[in-house]
Length: 349
Image (tube, rainbow, N blue to C red; front, top):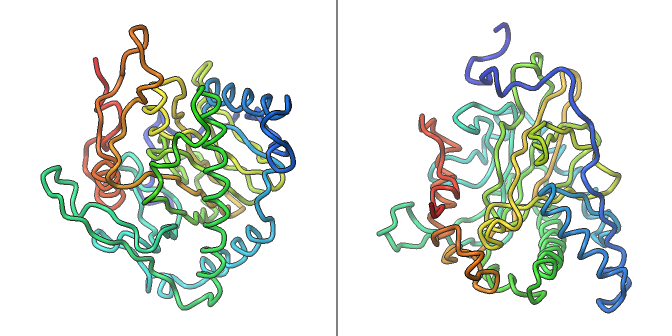
């Protein structure tokens, strides 16, 4: 395999194809939210577009979203400084199975190693989570962020960016609620003690991008993901209509949004989480910055009663978000030789 450790090599069916489909996922202009009112027809059109994108793609981009471009640029500058350090410097805030927040370079997706480095931090500090995935253990623990000494302004930039992303994500959740026929703030209570977090992804150039993935195919387990990235393409989405992998071309200053598994359950599969992955570049590095909106640890995730009836009975049993979240986190560190827990483990047959 030359320079590539076998731990990185994808099975043949999961390797990226040489010729990829490039098709734009829906791009939605949020300017009516920034300067308009909910009574205007253009606002209703935004809600309609959100619902259509969630149903047909599970992904969309938003432009004119009102989030600070300066905050994003500052975050990107500090992130680049962090990843440009030596491994020894970055390992000062290295995460492990005990301290799950911080820097890491050996993450697994579906038990195959990803070609990337990451730095994770939570939006709430401390973040309350279960002490163990054991359903009988009711102990709660606290996660604290691990901030590096360098770059000195990283913490300030990331905390500011986190507030911007939380505001945008909750705004989008209001639109998603309206598109489902729910009250706009129907979801807000689930995030009172949120476990939301942000990841800085650094994908170095790869000598064998036809064999390796920056991040293997997966679905996001949370409620909503809000992704910023640089100008190097890499994200691919599995198109619902035919199962083909489609490369996402990001619009300038846009955010890429995708529906997570929690919304799939809340909506009783009206909206579905869609598989996606990250391909690599042999010459260019790539950075991306997903914000994962996730509920409080004590949330029991289940289909919303307002969306159920005799023709649309619940398709999932309730599950505890905190225990589910912690179980999935374990697979980032250890090759479990079995597929990680998924929402379909709670599917009602």
